[in-house]
Image (cartoon, rainbow, N blue to C red; front, side):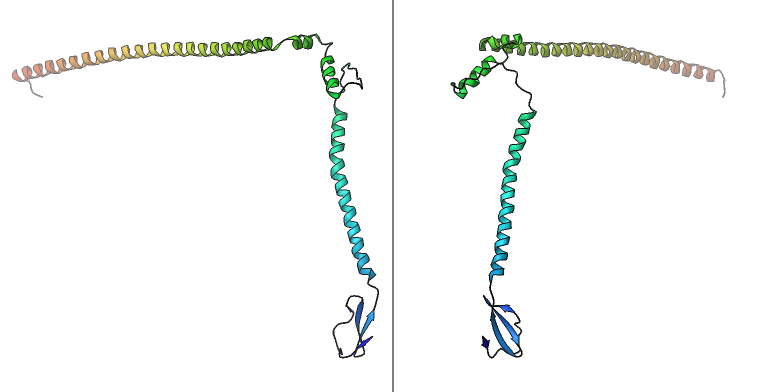
Length: 198
């Protein structure tokens, strides 16, 4: 199909939805072609995206499951001698397994036989022991502080007595010095009276 009036047009192979416009010696020509290659490339891209999405979903779902199964396989086996009866409900099985587990351990049996009042009494006794221990430590620290305070008080009293003694000695020495000066002045005046000269 030829279209006139499109001379020297820049469109050389521009697609018009199933037709291509070709420059053919000054004449514009539209040529029909099948448009399946575009739809097939779009379909391929969609298919690849769907596959990638499916792989991501499968990876996100299976990774936690594998981790959980590895964690379960790494746990040590339970050595409970528990009987499983399919006639019981899961709650009954759980209760019976908890009752049977550890029945061969005498310490665990003794702990399980204790009632709440006994457990509370033991807890109170433990708290009392801890409180008594803290109180004894506090008393020991107080006694040590009192001894140190008494020692320092005695040393302070000794220092005060020494200061008082020194103060008394200083006062006596000062009084003796004054007396010596007076006596020295008296002898000097008498010597001058008798004609003594420097």
